Image (cartoon, rainbow, N blue to C red):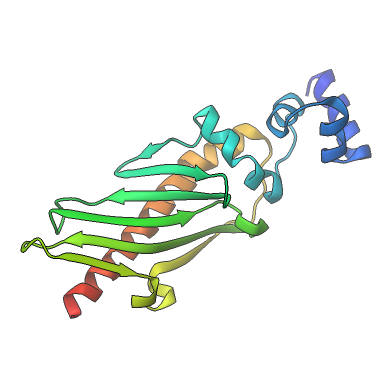
Length: 180
């Protein structure tokens, strides 16, 4: 640790993160970067908007567009599955790390839309499936040593795990359609 990191960490330990941030006039991300401090679940959730701006959370992952909804504080995943089963097919999910300071990621695929070969629209929502078929909680209990470890977790764990869960939800919606 550098002298600055040590001094900032002592100040954080004595005054608390929020008070240190306020007294130094720094943003959350600036203080984390300068102090190289641990990131708890509250901070991890608070950083999401900044991580989009830094490019740590991409706006596009595989076939999904990701965005941060500042009003509701959630990460939206809009995934296009066109051509896999139907000409047009899309899911809309929310998957926000440490939402409401939970130990993990709630993944909620709230809508499914497709167009069949007769150009008939299929539109389903959470009410059409049992909760466990369109909602999955991915548990994660470890906090992060620093911003670099959080960034690595996003790329190596969050993105692929959420995408995999959304694919599972997609298949549950498809199975529901095929049963009807």
